[in-house]
Every structure is written in structure tokens, then in C-alpha cells.
Image (tube, rainbow, N blue to C red; front, side, top):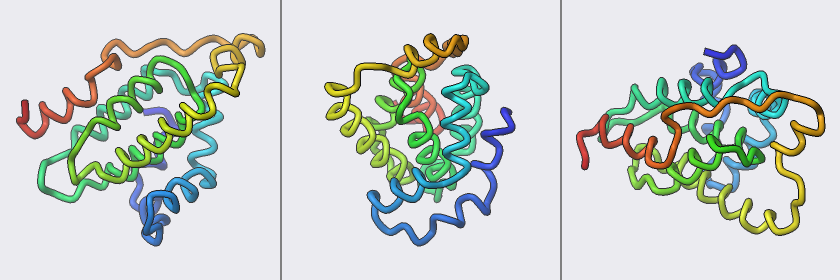
Length: 165
């Protein structure tokens, strides 16, 4: 696991956001968090690849069990915020898939993802440069796409875990 992603799975990371009672409040708090900002920077500079993000999401979702509180919900919400300004294949698929999940155990992350997708739609008309273009301008390598991060991957992981079809 990439060292920048490790703090997201620690209990003390989740404990910092207990007081966030609204989705807007949680989105704001996660956006200001130093760990989330470091992950955003790691994505921009290429030190976190799409493959690492994919493996991380897979690892988090492997602990999911339907009907049981899922601590990974906040972890996924933090990752949503971290990839919110990335318009690459993984980020787009991750956000799109997460907004379609209708599970109580993933309610915070799916609501945060829906908010991010909505904000991206409203700002996409005014933003002329994507992170991919920024990376090219800086001479940075593009992160490789994860093999299983295409459309439906998160839904598949969710269905596989809880036995839903």
C-alpha cells in the first residue's frame, strides 16, 4: 500500500470527523484535512498511481459486510475528496460507480461522491485544463490505469461482497 494512503485506514483518522453531522460539513472537513491534501498532491505528481488507488479501494471494500457498520465508508469519502480534482479514468469511474451505490453502510461516501460529481459538472464548463494536461505541462508521467477500475467495478465488488445481484 502506498504510504500516503495508509493514514486513511487508521482509527484516529476516522475519529477526527465524528463531529461532522452533515454531508456538506464532512466534505468541507475532508477537503481541509492535511492527509487528504497530501493524497491529492500525490495523485497530481504521480506518486500515487491509478493501480495503487484501485488496490486500495479493493482492500477497503474487502472488509465490507452488509448490515454491519462499515468504517471504510469514511475512508472512501476521504478518497473521493482526494480524487475530486482528478479527471483521469480511475477517478471518473470511481466517482460514477460510488454515486450509484445505494447501501446504508456506504451512505456518507456515496453522498460525498454525488456532491463532488455535481460540483465537477458545474465547474467543468469553466475549467479549461484537466489534471492530465497539467501533468503533461509539468513533464510528469501519467499514472497507469488499473485493470479492473472500469465502469461497474465498485458495484461488482459491492455485489460480490454482500451476495446481491
